Image (cartoon, rainbow, N blue to C red; front, side):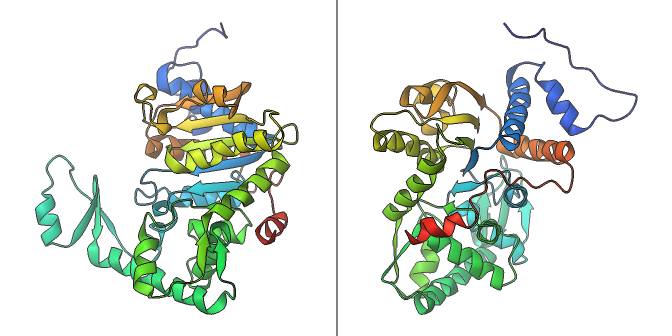
Length: 346
């Protein structure tokens, strides 16, 4: 048993900071308690020396959370990112001036939306014209890459780095991909064709260079093997589950195999998801229990499962981190930096 629970109460004499509220929520219960624990675990990662790996799934970019992800990368609170394609391309919508509008998902007429040329993400919509234009915009990147890359193949990680640099050159430096490229943070998108880039590829008409996603895993393993325990260690944070989570997780089992069976788990892990564990979905595979059986997390680590919508949890945690560390804080302990270029070229 841990310390005695302290009841939550309203502080009427002066406003409490979000950071203080999150810390106090640890003495609450249910998912409020877990959100407070996730906040403390993330602070522990930032204060430590491990490589912080961030997995992004779900419709985070269209929901407006992409500036928070870019902020985490800028501050050094995420040293490696694995993402779905949508989360590192749909941020370009707003950066290019597209507006997203809210709708009532229980009463919206999807046939009418189609007739009006609107695409729906549950409770918000965007102009189909704007969305299609964003996909066409990415076609220009494929043409650029075909003209500038002199090799027959390119790793997915290098592909995303070049994509980020290209976005930066077009005044879209606030995007997640451009922010990762600017700060030498590896960005892995294992299913890059599952999203707007696929239509950009089709529309571009070019078929080279070929993107070698298996090389991505080789690059990821070289990065992880350098950092994983018994070295400085790695930590994992998952917003949702899916392929990004598994990409980060299975590096632990592969490094274990490379080392001849020596366990190489993440030292700490946080997952924020609404997926239930009982249905066997990857999103719900608990970092606090099931994943330990695979050697992906260590049983004596700080492993937190928070079953909460990321659109609630991430803004609160980011605000709490901003208040706790202050506006000028930059973490450099886990940063890969110039070494990432070595991994890409190896």
